[in-house]
Length: 162
Image (tube, rainbow, N blue to C red; front, top):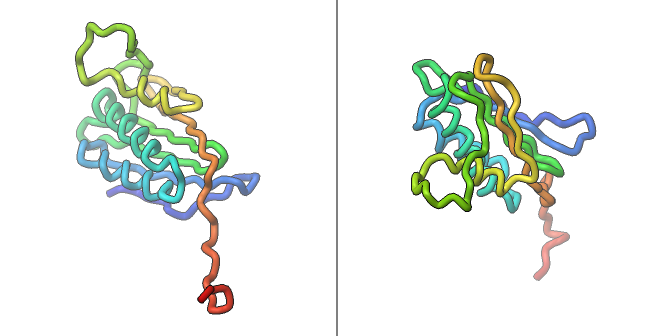
């Protein structure tokens, strides 16, 4: 069963909100992770970019680490602030995540191996921490200048125009 924490956590500065959700390490969970992220960023101009990043990072987690094995899991962490932080944590195994696609090397016509490169093109910053033994967190910071309103303005008859 997936754990979800939809209550936003205010940062120390009060300028950002963060969420974390754990998903079972199965391919059918990737669209759910994407929907989760896009829902939280729906009021921003980067919702589709955030969804793309989550899809790529979650796919890598289940394809290349123990997260995709029986009983595995991956964790999506999102922070909405001046920069949007998107992180996916796996259970380790395999190698170390690296950006390896060279767009000038046209010999490889494979559809795989380009995900982290594509994420790096969207991100202001991309990074990895952890190890194959303990697990990795692959993260990307995306520029988000338009945060959603924390409260919707009240519409009253006094401020409606005829």
